[in-house]
Amino acid sequence: MSFVIAAVVLVGLLCALDLLLTVGVIKRLREHTELLSGRGGGQVSLGPGDEVGKFSVTTVEGEPVHDDMINSETVVGFFSPTCGPCKEMLPKFVEYARGAPAGREQVLAVVAADGQQDAEAVAPMLSTLAPVARVLTGRDADAVAGACKVRAFPALLRINRSTRGRLLVMANQVDLDRPAVASR
Image: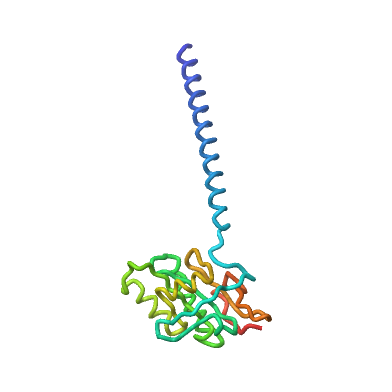
């Protein structure tokens, strides 16, 4: 009989310990959720209606691009060669860009790479994007990413001039499965 009592007490203590550990884990998860939600609410860039900052950059082909030049709806894609989701999204982005009504003039591709990455890591992405978009990398990419407050990759924005002449984000999500159409 004492064996059964000892077993019941042991099981009770194990259940109490398990309950205590579970409460501790739930408390830590709530703390982490609050910390993560305080970091921008999961938004990776400017949101719709936000004004894009000033920038003046040069594409990899030597073509100047600045914020005042954007006068029609433009899709801006932000990629990194070390980003797995970027590599997965790239073929869809290229196909979408091919359908842009104004061609390369309506598509800007920003390939961000940290200073330690060599040209071999960036080159395949640049050669894929160059036929369909004006491509930026290096400090020029950093300038546009800063103007759009991009904090994570990949990011896609549709930007355009407002009726008051300000450059605004029209959408911070672009459905790459739908064809690009002229802005209305």
